[in-house]
Image (cartoon, rainbow, N blue to C red; front, side, top):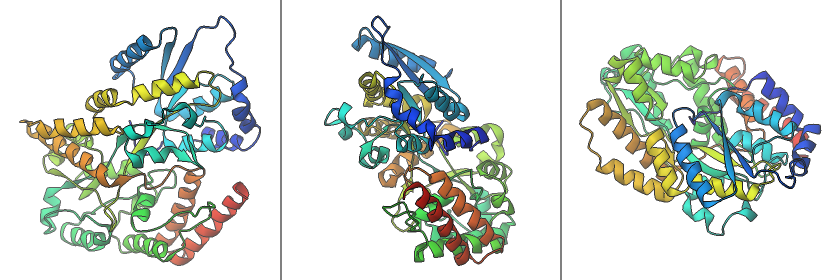
Length: 442
C-alpha cells in the first residue's frame, strides 16, 4: 500500500537519466503514437499498484459500474507490483504502449510531468472538481500551474509507543514536538538502556527525516528550485540530528539501515516508539504479540505549528493516452465519495474525498469494538483521521526530490559521523544541490 516510495534500483536510475534526453521526446511526442484507427475497440487501460488479488472484487465492482455509465468503453485493469511500476511504465512509454490511467506515487509522477509525460488534467475536469477533495491534498498534484494528479487514497502516520518502556523511563507519553525529543531520548536511554526512536538517514529510504526538517521550520527550496535550506532553521535542524547521533541517543544503524530496521527494533522491544500507520498494529499482533500487548497509539511528532505529514497516491493520465477524457472520468469515479469510502473501509486507508472522510470518521466514532486488539487498531485509525485536519504533503512532489534527499542525507551522515561540522555539511549540501539545480533549471 501507500507509504514511502520504493528504493531506487539501478534500472530506474538509468531510466530516469533517459528522461533528460531522447526519451523525453518520446514522452512529449507520444500523444500522436496511439491515435485509434477506425474500427478499433474502445479499451481504457488502467494500472494500479499492489491491489490484486485482495481488492480484485472491489475493482471489479467499480469497473462494472463505470462501464454501465459509459457503454462502448471497456476497462482493461492491470495491477502492477509496487517495486516494478516505474520500470514497466517507462518501458511502456518508450514503446508507445502506455496505459491511459496509472496509480503512481507523487514523486515519480512529478518526474514524468516535468518531462511532458503527463497530461494537464485542468481542461478535462468539471469546474467544481476540486471541491470534493481535501484542499491541501488536491493542491499536492499541481506543478507549475498544471494539475497532473487526482488524489486517491492517503496514509497518515501515528506514533506507536511501548507503554512499558515509557513507564520505566518515568514518562506517561511520548513527545508531541520535535523540540522535546532530546530530553525524551536521554531519559529513555538512561533509564532503560533502549533507544527512544529510529529515523533513518539512508539516502534512498524513508523521507521521514526530511519531513521532520520541514516541521522544524526548514524551507527546502526557493521558487527557482535553488537551495533554501542553508538557513538558521536548517542549521538548527542539522545540528539537532547530528548532536542526537553523537550523543548516542539514536541507534548507530540509522546511517546504514532503513525504516525496516525501526520495525525490527520495535518488535524486539528495543525501541520506545515507531511512526507507522494504524494497520502496523495488526502485523505487530501477529509478529510480536507481547510487544503489541503493551503498545499504545499516540498523535504523531510535529513541529511548533502542529502540522503532520500525509502520503498521497495519485491517479495520472500519460500524455500518450488517446482516451484522456475517459481516463479522467474513470479517475473521478474511482475517487468519488462512495467509492473512496468503500475502499477506505476495506483497505483501512484514508480517503482524499471530503465526503468520504466525514462518513468514515462518523462510522469509526459510532463503532464500539469489544475485542481488545480491535480496540487498539480502532483508536489508531481514529487518531490518523484526526491527524488529517492538520496534515499536508510536507515534502511536495517535485522533479529531483529524491536527489535532494540523497544530498541532504549524505551530508548529514558526514556530520553525524564527525567527518564535518554540521554547518559545513549543510553548506556542502547547498553547493551540491545548487550545482545540480543550475544544470537542470538554468
